[in-house]
Image (cartoon, rainbow over all chains, first blue to last red; front, side, top):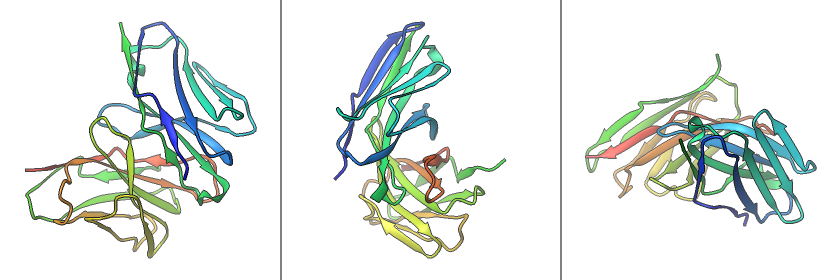
Length: 112
Length: 113
């Protein structure tokens, strides 16, 4: 079955860039997503990328996709304390019936 | 504004009781999902439904039940058979055939007292 892996924890200083990494096993993945979860809240969709794209940029967020290595990353420029949260990557593929497979989440801590 | 609403935000259950968590969406989404999240853990799928009057078990369905009598509503009952129900429960919805992922509710925190 599909598997999506993330590192558990990342700590950065305010103003630095953060890079959160994700690997997946399903070579037929069509869309890959990044969600943000603040404490005690639901997940908020940040951005998503189609598998035929290498990169997508949206303000401070840059998504890079290396389809050959099945590696997805989310770069947050000029990280702020308000970016402290858990970040989940997720993927879906054509035969998934719209179902997403989520990684275990990466907790980002931003130090002032 | 359209959205997905979970209620209550906090719920306390005595041992041996059944409790029902509400999830309502006015997004006209076809599919709805229930996830469980334990502290420091990822999401685990409990049940999902892609059409009214039909639902499928997820990875951890034992001790839970659902219904989908209306497109807008997908309540989750945590039964007394669920031995460790204390967790954060998240409901989500999506449009079938679209690529824009799930919309999540704000969650219900269930505690056994």
